[in-house]
Amino acid sequence: MKYSTVLLAALSTTASAATIGQFWGQSPLGLPGTGDPVPGQSPLKFCGPTYQDILEINYVNISPNPPTPGATLVVKASGNLTHTIEAGAYVVVEVKYGYIKLIHKILDLCENAGQVDLECPVKAGEMVLTKEIDLPKAIPPVCALTISNNQSFKLTTFQGKYHVMADVYTKDDEPITCITADVIFHPNKPGFS
Image (cartoon, rainbow, N blue to C red):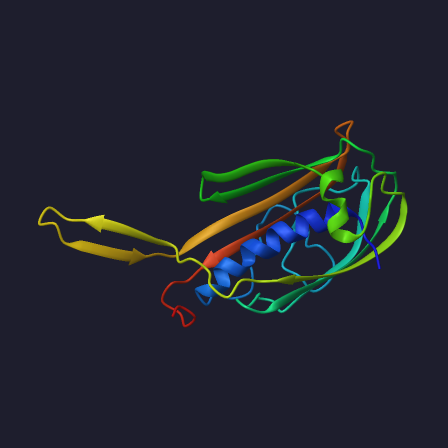
């Protein structure tokens, strides 16, 4: 079964980020308050209005939610692509901790099309995706190491909220879709070993 590379790129990014939060025992991914929820059983939201997007998402289901380290994350999605996606389409991926931008990458969609058994151009029409993503068993902790004046060390874990966004465009800068999710870390809950 196939689905647009566009959605997979967005989902893979948010799903991978979700894994890190589960390591700390967080609840299912939190939702940013910027747009409407993506239909289905997932924590994803649209970045804002979707009336200009050329990808109409019917649903996205993610299981398990929250993702579990060492488990297989299954993403099932359905949608309608109203225009063909050609070479030159791209996705802007951002990960922020509060107001601090940790990651900002621009990825070529067509270079990644093979990950979902597609190639560019991606033809317009109804599409379905089922993708399995093996998540790593070890997720690095979020912590800070401080050294005091008397040379003693202190390792502090902290709660954090990471905002993940995947904003997807055609080669002509037309919006395809934009999806967001928040990953919330709770260091004092079970899950850290």
